[in-house]
Amino acid sequence: MAELSDRTRRNAGDAYQLDRSAGRLQVLEHHARDPMVKVQSLTFRYPNGATVFEGFDWHVERGQVWAVIGSSGCGKTTLLMLLAGLLRPSAGQVWVDNKPLSRPRPRTGLILQDYGLLPWATVWRNAALGLDIRAFYGPDGIHAPADENLEDRDERVAYWLKRLGINHLAQRYPHQISGGQRQRTAIARTLALRPDLLLMDEPFGALDAPTRQDLQQLTLQLCQEQNLTAVIVTHNIEEALYVGQHVLVLGQPPQRTARVVQSPRTSTVDWEETRRSSEMQRLVEELTDLIGDEGHEMA
Ligand SMILES: Nc1ncnc2c1ncn2[C@@H]1O[C@H](COP(=O)(O)OP(=O)(O)OP(=O)(O)O)[C@@H](O)[C@H]1O
Ligand SMILES: [Mg+2]
Image 1 (cartoon, rainbow, N blue to C red):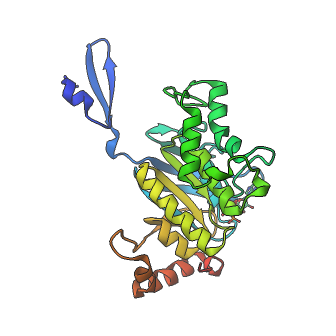
Image 2 (cartoon, protein in one colour; image 1 turned 90 degrees about the horizontal axis):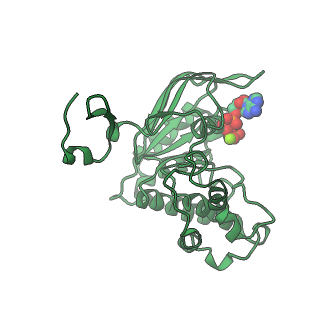
Image 3 (spheres, helix red, strand yellow; image 1 turned 180 degrees about the vertical axis):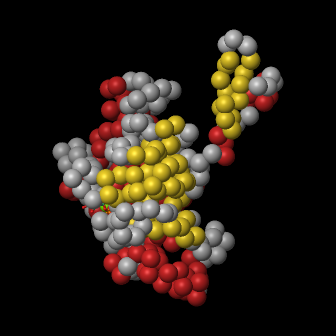
C-alpha cells in the first residue's frame, strides 16, 4: 500500500479508497485501462427455452464502437438485455464500468428495436421522458446517477432536439413523423440522459437507405463527440463494418466463443473507396460464411 500525493490522487481513471485505519489512500485498481464491458463465462438460458450463451467471454474497451451481427434468433437482443441488466445471467457475470451488473444502471442508454416512443406524447415529451423519470425519483444512484442535476432539464431536451435536427417537430406526435424522425427522437431522449454506454438494437433496420446512412453517420459522430462506448446490433453486414470498429459475429446458439472481425474503415480513407476494395469483398464473404446467408443483405 502506497502513500499517495495529491497529484497522484487526481490522476484520471484510478480508483482509490481511503483506508481509515492507516489514514492513507489505497489504490484499488487502475481502471482507466479496464474494459467498459466485460462478459465473463456467461451462460444464459430462458426458462424452458434453449441455451443462448454458454461460457461466453467478451469485452469492450472504453470508447469503442462495436457492431454485433448474426442471423435471426442467434441471441443479439438477449446479449443487449444482459448488458443492460434487464436479464440476469444463469451463470457467469457481466461487468460494466468495473462493477458486476446486478440491475439496470442509469448511465447505460438502451434504444430498442421499435424505439419505444409513447404514442400519446409529443416529440418533446418523448425526448424528455427519461429526464422526467429521473426527476420523479431524484438522484438516488439507482434510477438516476447520484450526481445528477436536473435544473437544466429543458435546455438539455432543447439542445438534443436541435442537435438531432427535429426541434421543429417538438409538438408533433410519433404518428405524425417519419420513421427516421422517430429514431432521432429516441436517440435525443437517450443522449439527454448523458450515458457512458449506448446499446442499440437494430437502430436503422426500418429506414430507407439515405435516411439510414444519415443516421449511421450521425450516430458515429455523436459517439465520438460524447466519448461513448457503443454496442450496435444489426442484421446488415455492410452496416456492421461501417458502424463497428470491431464486429462481434454470433453464429448458431449457444454462443460459446466471441468471433471478432476488425472493420477496414478508417477516418482517413473514404468509405466509398473502402467499400469497393477487395479486402471489403473478402470480409463480406467471410462474414456471410460465419453467420449464414440470412445476414447477407447489403444496404
Ligand atoms: N422470453 C423468451 N423466452 C424464451 N425464449 C426466448 C425469449 N426471448 C427470446 N427467446 C429465444 O432466444 C433466442 C435468441 O433470441 P433473441 O431475441 O436474442 O434473437 P435475435 O438475435 O435478437 O433475433 P432477431 O434478429 O430476430 O431480433 C431465440 O431462439 C428466441 O426464440
Ligand atoms: Mg433481436
